Length: 127
Image 1 (cartoon, one colour):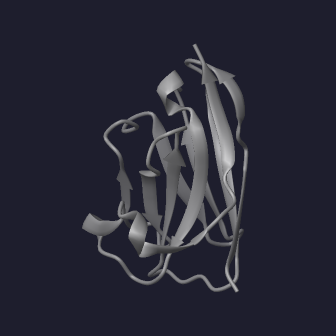
Image 2: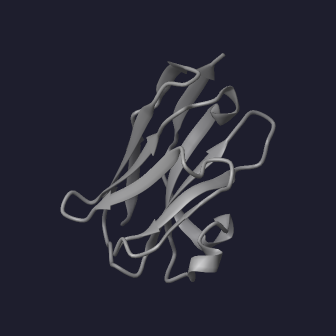
């Protein structure tokens, strides 16, 4: 059984930084993709960043490029999201997810391809 547990959310001022962690238990393989998604109140859940467990491929939403960085530690079975230069529009619940199987680099942002989700961690950025 696959379980994902996020941590690291909180309240931060605009311009600040936070680092989210997602510990994955259960089956992992280099072909799976791990993604970070976020959902603001009243909005759809959207892709933020994704990484293949092998670490060879990463993708970012345009809104976070150059500010957020995704990484994985295969020994600790943990995926991280380093968030810098945070903006109020980054506010939301951040979810970690694992793909159901192999997905192409071009599809790594597609929510429907992720079958396992964590409970989410709240990130609030004040102006």
